[in-house]
Image (cartoon, rainbow, N blue to C red; front, top):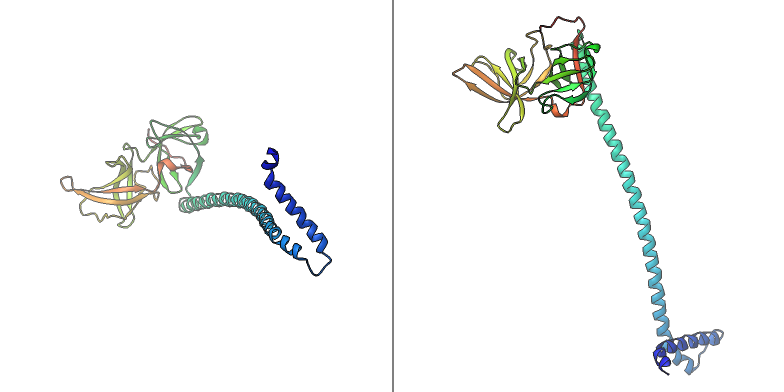
Length: 282
C-alpha cells in the first residue's frame, strides 16, 4: 500500500496516457466522439501539451548544442587562419625590412664604389653591454684590420679596435673615446667633431662640437661623416640634431644628436674595406 501511494502519481499519468492512446485508436476512424471521450480528452490534451512542449524543448536544446559545437569548431578554424595570416604578415614585414636595408646599402655602395663591404654577425659583447662594444664573426682572414669602419644600413656603428683570425672587436659610436669628423648637411659645415654622449637619463646619444658661435647649426639638421681624417669614409649618416646650445666661454656650439642606428637593435652589420688597402696607423 505504501508503494502504491509512493508511485500513485506515476500510475495515474500512465493510466491517462494509455487511455489517451486507446481513445485515439477508437476514434481514429470516426468523425464524431462521445460525451465521455470528449470529457477524457481535456486532461489528456493537457498532458499531451506538456509532453509536446517538453519534447520540443529537448529537441531545441539538442539543436542549440549542435549549433554551439559547430560555431566553436568554426571559431577555432578562424583563429588558426588568423594566426597563419599573422605569421605571413610578419614574414612579409621581415622581407620588406630586408629589402629596404638592401636598398640603402646598394644606394651607399653606388656612391662609394671604392670600397668593399663585408657582412658579419654579432657573436658577443665587449665589456658590460652592446653600447661599449661587441665582437663579430669576421677577422684578419677576411681582410679586416684595425680602425676599419663598421656600418649598418641605417648609418654609422663604430670602428674596429681589435682583430683576431676569425673575429674582431667593434667599439661603437656610443663610446665616448670615439671621435668622428662630422659634416652638417643643411649648413654644409665640415668642421664638426662628433663624440659619444649620454644624457642625464643615461640615454645613448652623440654630440657634435662646432668650434665657432657663428655656426648655423640648428635642431633638425642631419649629420654625416665628413671624410676628414682618412678613417671614416664620407657620407655615412650619423644622426639628427635634437638640441643645440652654446658655451660662449669656449666659443663652441654643440648639437645633441639622436643616432640613426640603435646600437642594441642592430641585426645587420658591414665592415668597410678599401679596395686598395691603406696602411692604417696603429
